[in-house]
Length: 143
Image 1 (cartoon, one colour):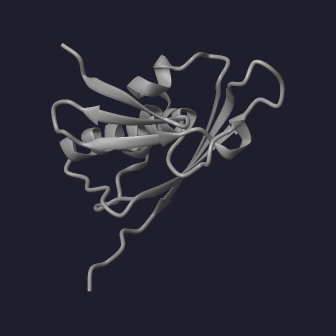
Image 2: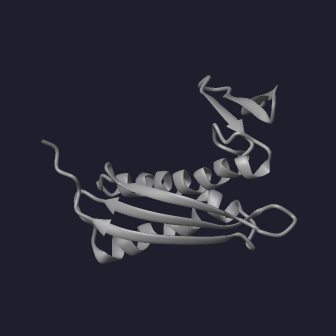
Image 3: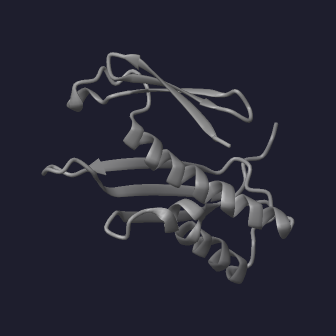
């Protein structure tokens, strides 16, 4: 059974439907490749998949140990090759983890390992550089 249905809308755009939830994501070709850049490009979604997989998988393991990562955030930068063929050559991930309670050094090391072994990370081609930086910070206190 299919997971995603994609309709081509014309003008280098697609409408993607996640069949289980009905959620939609639109894509557009980037401005440097004939598009308008008005939505995620397909390669943006690859970079997004890596970032969200890292954080989701870390949160699954943290939850198991009673650690909450709510308030954590990341910036993801996709770097494209300047030569043909056009492809992603590096994805930079800058992650600030806010943990409550702050895990032990051993638990932090185990969680950091997950950033390099989440399902998307190990599914990407080994030539694609994954530069993951992790900073630990105190949780944001609610008012």
